[in-house]
Image 1 (cartoon, rainbow, N blue to C red):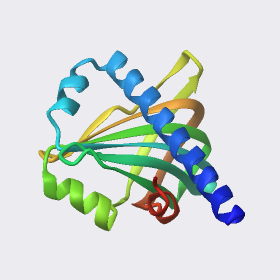
Image 2: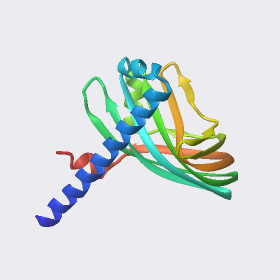
Image 3: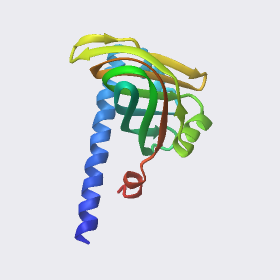
Length: 176
């Protein structure tokens, strides 16, 4: 019973950290692109992720966590992400991504089946308030927009990378 309670407390803490990250990322997105506030208000759902990626010469990898919010039901689904790839690159990039879904099926497919993406080329340099990046909004289709920005890091890369998104079973199982 005590072990179960400790696990629930740890899961609650992880969920709270993810929700804090979501709030901070959305606040930054709204500051940098005020029009996204209305876009998210009119969406069927959105997902916010934090990811750290590492590129070392020919190999890249990364992992992160996030949450998808279904605006129709009000439910949050906690998720993970992972990536691996090959290509020329060097650096570390701590980035945030916001997916805005304009289609119920697209949102449901993302949450229930996960998504895979591949192909990436960018240059990013950011240290606190200094620096810049060569990434921003990407329209995957009329159904989904993706906004990406670095939190901190420096990377120069051209990689073929697969990124997978999936449900975090532990954090969704023990939600109170």
